[in-house]
Length: 307
Image 1 (tube, rainbow, N blue to C red):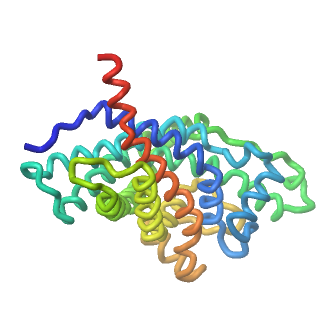
Image 2 (image 1 turned 60 degrees about the vertical axis):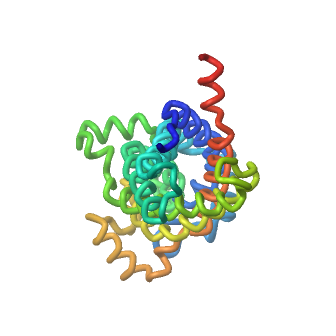
Image 3 (image 1 turned 90 degrees about the horizontal axis):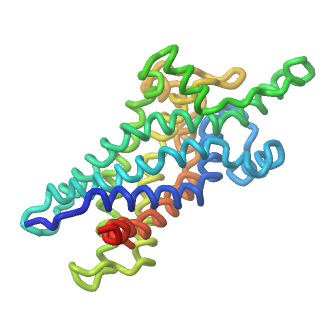
């Protein structure tokens, strides 16, 4: 018989892991979004240049633009992702035997599919907030010397964006880019979870013992960075499609294929790897921290305390 898992405990673990991880790496994620969205001769030369310019023009907390919506929704998002993977691994296990690579990949696929219920609207709202500063700088530069340049750019809020989309497009507006999100998150989970499980297994002295926390951290970092870089082209497509407002002279897209074609034609194949370094720096510690918190078993401890 497969070992029973406590779904509430896994949800608590995943939620705490997401909060801790996102708080640590959010500024790098903001830089990634801005780098992926700029077309042609952009205003940022790289991650460090982006963060420095953001702090100079928007202050320290400008690096955390969009963090509130991310922190609000990352708890259910990470909880669903990590708990769903455990759930599917448990379902696919046979009489306590180790999962084959194919079954590990299927479990990851299930986890990636489940999480987009929360991931897609979270990413959509977050991207608008993260990219607002870049758009303001670009539009002011394009309108230099005019009244538009002197005007103070209006800063959007997640609530206003969500209300506007729901009124104009209904629930489909909030889920804009759902297909692109699935296209990114399912392959990511298919790569990440089996890779993490097998690297983490190397630190276990026996099948019934947990690996040391530092080994789980390293395994999460390695698996996260590999998976993140592998799906960066899909993340670029998702980011571009989910960005509602474009800068002066920037392309708009009607779908995934149109987006891919225009990026290839106008910016070249290297544009599909924009933000890969940032993405690796975001995902590696995010999942390293997440796996350590998850494997500590805080959820099991909390539930056990109240029993």
